[in-house]
Length: 206
Ligand code: GTP
Ligand code: MG
Image 1: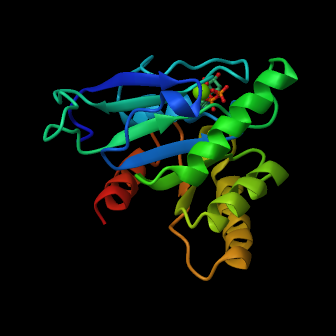
Image 2: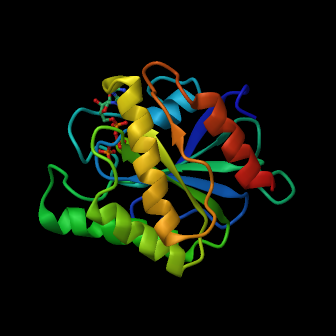
């Protein structure tokens, strides 16, 4: 499915604008600027499909991407959808705005029946922060499966990536007996993308 072209179908600024529940969904969540939109572009080999920026707070809606060639009407649904989300935490925007995005993200994560897995992105330079833990708490409570993805692995040396993988594993072990494999990625260098594509396919089909 990743070898075919993908397209943007909808941006939802609030829950009432979500597309109807249909194909299995996989969402990318994480702090502002962690690299969610860049990772989606890298996975889909489409520079600029999801809009990215140096400034935190770029993505402001729940953006839905699907493989091209499906009408979306009954019988002709795409096999899956990827969702790019606004970041949580710091953003260069007024507080009410940031609060509204956070609420949208949390409401979607908690209540979407067709959401198969959340890929929770963590900046390899910073590790898991308090608001990442809050999101994990919310996902655990809502019984939504999530998988941790380290981003921007090209920005630190390989031994530092390994160390963070170990630390992250220790953190996750404290939360749950079993959890999906942590994936280290670089959207710039292409590292970890095939592994992540496999994980997505497994989450959708398995
Ligand atoms: P918001 O939508 O604001 O929450 O941000 P986001 O998580 O979508 O991040 P985005 O993809 O816009 O990337 C933020 C910045 O990080 C951009 O300047 C990207 O070029 C940079 N970036 C993203 N991924 C990587 C990566 O793998 N390596 C490096 N070196 N830079 C990256
Ligand atoms: Mg973004």
